Amino acid sequence: MPGKASQPHSAEALDWPAAIHSALKSQRVRQVSYVPDAGHKRLIELCHADRSMTAVPLTTEEEGIGLAAGAWLGGERAALLMQSSGVGNCANALTLAATCGFPLLMLVTMRGEAGERNPWQVPMGQATPEALRLAGVRTLRLERAEEASAVANTAAKVAFEEQGAVALLISQQLIGVKSFEEKR
Amino acid sequence: MKALNRRAVVASLLERRDGLLVVAGLGAPAWDCAAAGDHPLTFPLWGAMGSAAMIGLGLALAQPKRRVLVVTGDGEMLMGLGSLATIGVRRPGNLSIVVLDNERYGETGMQKTHTAYGVDLAAVARACGFATARIIRRSAEVSDVRSGIYRSKGPLFFQVKVKADAVPLVLPPRDGAHLKHRFREALLGAQ
Image (tube, rainbow over all chains, first blue to last red):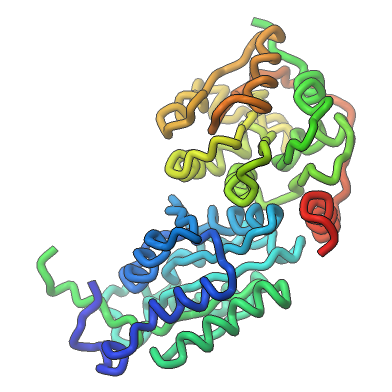
């Protein structure tokens, strides 16, 4: 669980996962696949509870690239939720976006940023923006809760109207830092 | 036991294909589907190894009234083994996977795949919750595969043991954007 202490009070006041969910809904996203992250906990729950969406738990993040391509072939829009460590798992599957021009909307919660307490999360977290760029995926940043709706809508438009591949990187500052001090 | 001819199996599954939507895994399965007749509602892969079954799942969820068939190889399926578990969660009734299992990586020098060492893909699919998961070895059983993919409640999984011999190369178009556009246009109409 994220450490509440490190979360700014504005994030508590503004339900940014609900804002992202509303943006996905208004952009007619029907398939939402994910490998869980604590930062995505609420958004995953909202997508499971939404009858207009099919939530698809994945065994590894690259599965979601294929799922999104199949959804688009069938006339539906998909989104893919993961944490930054999962970006590394997607490399070769991203060929689908690069060679076929499949729309791709990735929502990536960042680890390995300021305040990270698990050093094993740092290499992939730090490499995430560049790894995406090398694979041909545009990146957008979400830093503050009050921007969630606007930035998520922008990302969805890049994916589905421009038919591009885009990852919305959700700042670790927004999610909170995993403390490792709570009882599991 | 004499293994089946891959081209004959695929031809019999794809003749009179009605509205069947097909995803073909990279390598020989894509060539087999091309040999059966290039079709706008076949999406052949030239890369993204391990993705075929998941593309089939996304398509099956998006088009619940159409039958969806993934034709792929044992090597490609092994790379996406987790996708069988993911399909087992959603269990789309309109999805079938046919693995043409020659027990070899045919495009890279005929190295043995895990199935040559006894790994049982159909048993994996069964354990993941597929409604039907069988190994097919005899030509008389191919009609069961056909009736399954067109009519039975899925998800269905058929591991078809095929000969490892070389067959003539028949290539589908390789422009990914073209393959995507023509599939969507044939399925959804002009966008």
